Amino acid sequence: MDRWQGLGDVPDGWGPSVVTIGVFDGVHLGHQRVVGRATEIAAQLGLPVVVVTFDPHPDEVVRPGSHPPFLCTARRRAELLAGLGVDAVCVLPFTREFSKLGPDEFVHAVLVDRLHAARVVVGEDFRFGHRAAGDAALLAELGEKYDFTAESVPLVADDGVRISSSGIRAQLAAGDVAGAARDLGRPHRVEGVVVRGQQRGKALGFPTANLETLPHTAIPADGVYAGWLTSLDPSGREEERWPAAISVGTNPTFDEQERTVEAHALDRDDLDLYGVHTAVDFVARLRGMERFGTVDALVAEMRRDVDAARRVCAGG
Image (cartoon, rainbow, N blue to C red; front, side, top):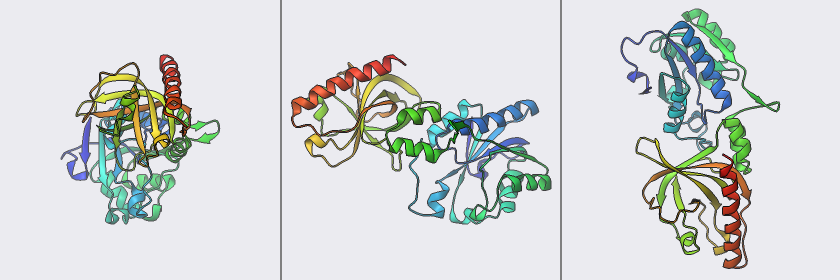
């Protein structure tokens, strides 16, 4: 899959294509439905599929300081889109100047002049142009003007509730990683480089990988979780994977203040992951974060957490 950083990276002579547009944070089931429709049309027409997305998140430019937590890294987003059959991802730098383009200007500059869109597929709530003045209906009108066909796709509903990135962020903030996984179509993943922490886990018999997460990462609510710890190579491909008990929080038993994400690979005390880029996938919440009266009480609970995590991971 090709990845273009801006319209200037689109190859000269790029021919007609099927285009879909959006932030696609998380590439959740709703996004997958939109992209799936684009790839279906592209297969019928014998054309490549291009995803147009944005960096930074438009909210951060339009309303500085309102940056929503990311459900996945930009690299992970591209990887997930490639897995859906996308041929190219065009990442548009979202600047204040770009945000002032009117709907017609946006369509001409992006879809017509550079990507030569033959068909455009968007979600039913798609908005574009200055002050989000454009919607799917206007996109269809502009398609008639510029000779492309546009269609909107209803977003997947889960128990009657529309799936959205904001809804998944709310689930994670509440610790509902199982609900988030249902809407994502896979467990929520947090990435980071393993750094040295207080090393309390090792002293207690449960060595952990302490992740230094990226800014604006969507981290689940404080608590203990079952999931998977995975080492990644420099390109982001998975190398090794271990079932894990995961702790998110400030470790109140020891009066610590820094919020951390730590993963204990079950039955492994021989791993040296310092400096390694890793991923933690959250499968189930085991309990909330608690303060224990003694270290012995904490260790006993950690043993129960490990047993519970082992049962969860054994089930898939």
